[in-house]
Length: 472
Image 1 (cartoon, rainbow, N blue to C red):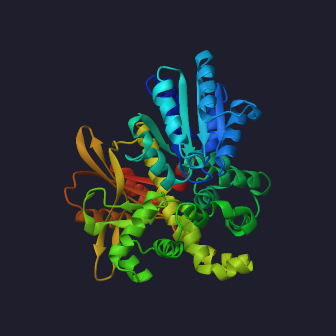
Image 2 (image 1 turned 90 degrees about the vertical axis):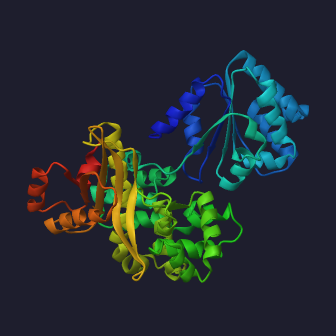
């Protein structure tokens, strides 16, 4: 059963209703559900769905002929097949989807040029919508999205499909308790393929004491089932050399996120590290961050791994490959994953807290608006560390500028007054601080004294994991 992807379906619907636009480009890593999204959207629409395959020119044409409904024995050329599509569209509005488009483009030297000519000239004014879809970021950029691409002169709608947010992913996880939902969301990375497997497992095993270990094995530790969606496989489809990329990602996952620290860890100069990071950014694996109040401050630039599924792999599995390859999964869980679970979950929890705020803001259920959201930190060059806020939102309250500071705590202890005071004191380091709200997110709730103080001060908000999971 198809679930979620509300905003993406809305974007496809808007494209469908725009008579001036003919080209839609969908891309994203394997497992994110691109094909499932398109097939669901096209269920009630007249369409041709062609999945290109890495093969010879002649075989590619044979596959396309079959998708269109033509007998290959007639020896169709690409132009003749597209003329058939033209005729079909003249009788009824038609969608033409080419999934794994880079395979199609590489199969014949002139395939892209011919298709481009039909979209721009022959199909101008006809009710044909063309969708080019692929999971190879670099190839999709080169062949479709870049300014040097043959498609540069055709207006298009672009959509990158990433992992689901927590609230869409939660539809697969409701059988589990709140803490398990958070952990399972984190290790899935919101990837629908993983979520569907987790959901199926929960139907029979949600109450098992070793649930988290068993699902972790299901997602990461059964090599024969998971190799196609592991981060290294995703990267290998884009890049030739893996050694330094893997080393840099392991470094990021360990918490070293600034260029100097990465350079020292991988024994490469900074001017080599930055291009590596840029490449990882170009394929959606890494993101560059700056404090939301200082977006151009290069001295505060840091990097992070985008998807929490990848973060888990490079934090726990890659540093412990001996146990992984030898099948000592229980040892890997007991000695590495379980002791480091709460630290890993800090990143997952921040993702969840941010989504909660954005969702509340979209429904006007916050006392402030959100115009920009990110984080903020100060660097301590002597200690080679940083301290700051997990989330900072810029917006307005009653027409006046407002800044919201938040920290997200994923630990076993309820939050006390001292933690609240620490949050407020740290805001003194932020320049241009106007009206302010102070938010504390906590996995384990809050002490009674903390609740009493927050109840008497209107600009302090306390949000628990239960609040996040129960918000609809």
